[in-house]
Image (cartoon, rainbow, N blue to C red):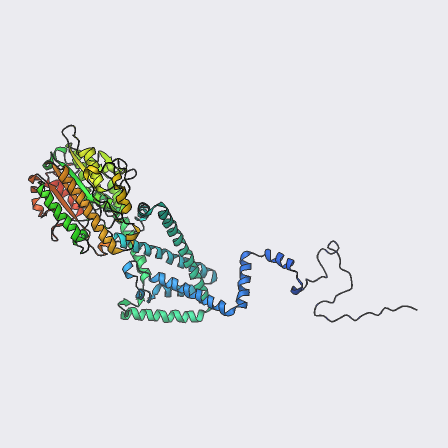
Length: 618
């Protein structure tokens, strides 16, 4: 009988029916036909790891984030809205950020920025890809404006003016060198690198914040459009009615105003460059013959001395003035006993808080040099500086005592200085006092040893430009007077420097900065007057003045730019020739003594001492 095999009824499944055919090898079935992939629950850990490793990093990150959101929905929602809130706060805060330290108050950040409303409307009107690009550019632009505002705050705090995007980048390098001299190279490098990284990070983070907010607006387009309409209406109403909170307008266009100011600075700078070049070429003394230059000072040794940061604040600030005015009055008395008389007035400096070379060049050239571009234009011209006039006359050797010069200084030729002694040319072996390479007392003694105290050849007299640097910020540590016979190579100042204050202790304390600033001016004036008493002769004429006011943190944001100027001499004829200037007797000018712009000093000085104007070509 035939044998029948009982077959089982196949079980019902949701997928294709399984057959009893044995599986074929890979060679027999290269395409895997007839074998559907196993369900996910049957995958092995090795297979899962292999597939995951092939996914792009971004896709993997998204997958994990989605898994976390699914597992912790409340935490994910809270984190998402927290990021939204931080992004909005960053954008709005950047748009409302003022550019002065005094305006950094909470009520400045409770206003409605018009730029945020306009930005939201524009982003709502764009399709996805253009919207993302526009949002990123919008955020990056806000970050750049924030950096400019921060630079404005710093420049206003120290130099009493805003940052000029055309001219002031070079001053950032000077600022790094100043920090290096004051607080060490490692601190300066760390500060510079940190500032650059922080600026780049701000650009990236603000751009990402704007992109995030643009996505939020797109997901809630109807609500966002209504909100923008309401905010715009409120802004227009508040602007029209002048609504204010605590004296601050609710409607703000701070960012647009900042851009307008920066644009005006750029435009004015470019126009000024061409106009100033013409002014620099016009010199009433360019053609004056040598024998008609400064005949009223022939036979005199003339010293033109700048005292760093010696400004009107030193004589009028209630914290600073008592010590400084007392020093000036005592100097007036001691010099009178030595046979010297003095007259003093005021000059309005072309710079404030720093950039001393602008003040020096303005006083000596008769040009108003208030920025670096003007300085470059002037020093490239044939302008007759006051120091060059002495040399051109043929009656004086011209010398520069420049303890602050620590590298090449090609401007010496423009100033007309035959010999220049820089920080390394005066034999100093003592310590630096913060930025100042040597104490003023040592620099003056070196001048006496190298130039003033030696006999000159050819019956010439000496004209010297001397820069005293001990009153340069940060005014810590400060030198002290020692016996003139004890100066030696300056090593005597070692213990004084070690016992002095640290610069960092003053940089954040305005009151201490004012006190130490006053002490620094007292020291500089004392060193100068003692030197004159000790080494001055019948033929010595001393002109000393400040180059600019101290930084705004010491003198105040609205302080004048006035600096004292004094002429001291034994010969009464020297002061008689400036009697019509109506300056105050003594080393301290009266509050209401005459005030001139600093660029007027050269011409007035030349004319007072007999120089005859002859423009070029006459």
